[in-house]
Length: 275
Image 1 (tube, rainbow, N blue to C red):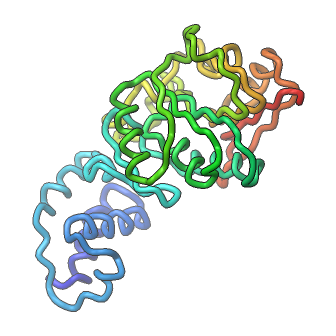
Image 2 (image 1 turned 135 degrees about the vertical axis):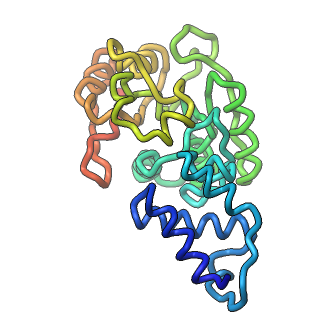
């Protein structure tokens, strides 16, 4: 089958389970992965294509498995990141959080930065890639996630310190003072599961997603209480911008700012101590 017919066939089959633009993007992804060719090479290809493994991939996609887990990696902010079921798939709003930090802190100087709850290492690696002079540490409770993050650091040519630790408990590493803490912690309430896509519920790690309904600010309170930092940048549940700011102010932050994402949702909060 020629490339154009094959692409249309894949996108058409995927249109049954996802929006048309997502179906087309996923169809390109599938073709690139299974042929080993870039999109440019595929667009220039004039012969027929033999694509081994396509039926299996389509079956897994129709079963709801995210394409990122099927192929074991994703591209995010120009980084090629390995993923497994111990790590969340990086989202656009997390890229916006990173962009906010970098905008506030132009290159120059040596800042000590902590990515709290690093998962795949995406935030820590993105920051280190853009600000190579910074001293960046990625923290996570999951040893599997830390192994993936460490490999992602090597894969993307950056040196990040990886640390195992629990934000909700008093631990010796918390005595360190940071210039910046960045975090995308669990913030989805258990009661919100009913409105979430099966691809998220069935495949992404629940420990990195969900918090109890009766304590939705659990991790923000833990960080505000235990981490010593001049500034903190947080990805948040849009329902709790005011609550997150209140927690930071309660634990000594002098000023807070909530920020909307490109969809107009309150998805980020920054807290600053008095300098």
